[in-house]
Image 1 (tube, rainbow, N blue to C red):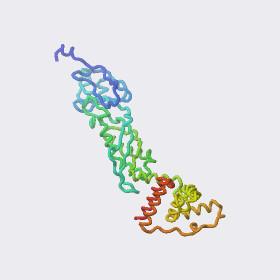
Image 2: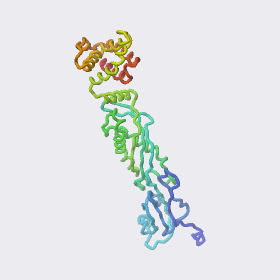
Image 3: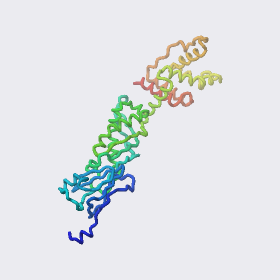
Image 4: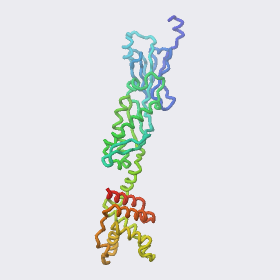
Amino acid sequence: MGLMDFIKKQFIDIIQWTEDTDGTLAWRFPIADMEIQYGASLTVRESQIAVFVNEGKVADVFGPGMYKLTTQTLPVLTYLKNWDKLFESPFKSDVYFFSTRQQIDQRWGTQQPVTIRDKDFGAVRLRAFGNFAYRIADAKLFHTEISGTRERYTAQDLDGQLRGMMLQHISDAVAQAGIPFLDLAANQVEFAAQLQAVTAPEFAKIGLKLESVTLQNVSLPEELQKILDQKIGMGMIGQNMGQFMQYQTAQAIPKFAEGAGSGGGGSGVAGDAMGLGAGLAMGQVMAQQLQAGLGGQAAPTAAATAPAAPVQTAEDIMALLEKLGELKAKGILTDEEFAAKKTDLLKKLG
């Protein structure tokens, strides 16, 4: 290089990065044909890491702080270039800045249902979605594995890969959490914690730290959602089936009395309730409720003392289901109560 060429050549004496856009993970300092002045100033701000790369190899890594670039502050680069202690000439090296800020509000979700294994229901198809946050923890590893020599690498470029990592570990998270499928919706924090635990090692392999995972929603298949609704209803009144029957009877008594007081005898609502009572032993439960309410003063009725008629045939069960449907249509039974009775009766068919 001639003297005039040397004079005309530009040298870099300040190296720094002021992040101008959100979501940038890696940015290459624009050196082009210029060289870095010996003794130049390097500024690495909080939430940044600077990496010097020489001939494709990662040399020195700098955390937050201000540095004067000399052979003392660039030990690896000095070794790679075999500089002696008297070196004070400009030099060339690629400089990459990495953002170590948390990348928050990253979305994950199942585009298609994910099949998981549940101890109660066997194979179950699950939909779920939520958020996660991560940061660059190992800039050298992230450079060699992900960002490479690109001028700029953003969180959007990495989005699809990270979502895939989250989704492929949902089954593992459910298994390790040990939460029954029907209880997932009520244990979202535990499920999210397990999803983070099983996914974090995959993030670490590319230089990232998975900081947090949240689960916003678990969508159950429609048929299991109905079972969950029944489970919630049972929890409100206790797990004892006798209590459940008493609860249903108590709901039916006002309408039964209304129908009986209208002089309809065995017709209308009262007739339907009596017909259902013969098949489901509702009359027996109702009589016991009335007996308890009167303090034992009323004489036991035939319905109270007679044993419940057993339901043995499929025809009997189907007839009872029809009566249940009529009561639901008349408003005596709620949709949830009807579904619970229906499920119980269909089990007997098996």
